[in-house]
Amino acid sequence: MARPLDHRKRAEMLAGVVTYIASHGLAELSLRPLAAALGTSSRMLIYYFGTKEELLVQALATQRPDLAALFADIVEPAQLPERLIGFFDVNSEGAEADSVRVLLQVLGAACAPGSPYQDYANAAIATFVTELAAALRRTGLAEDPEVVSTLLVSGLRGIIQDRVITGDRERTGRAARALIEAVLPG
Image (tube, rainbow, N blue to C red):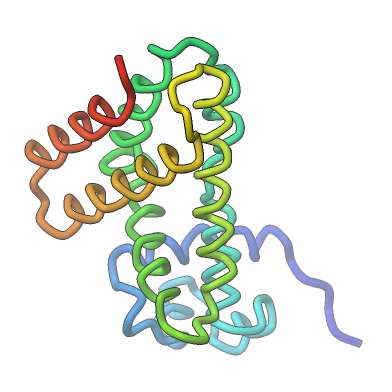
């Protein structure tokens, strides 16, 4: 009989995965060095998660922001640009920066045919677009909320990726604000 999963240990491992990948990268991810960094064995990672791809997807799921809550209280048009700028700041440099760095790598990997990250990437993008479109509808800021939401989500993701790659905070900060101001009438 297999021993039951230690849920506390599992949660600790998931928390460490995102930090590890943010500093070591996804492209060369190998279970042995990851396991050593987490204080376990590659055999235990497989026991808990099945595959390294599933391990990463579950780790990212623990880091996913509650986008419904992020936009739920937005009813006035002026609230949305402020919330998006705050979201950009937190996700490009704040507490969520490691998660976003890893998410960008997963989204890139999801572009490959047959990627094990395809479903996760689709769900992550769809959730963000759907929740932002709902806020756009409530505020009346867009005639086509899904298109405007897609433009903002994709544009901000690209600007965050630029910041991660170049480290240029000043230019990318101005670009994010310019995108939000250009897309949301104000």
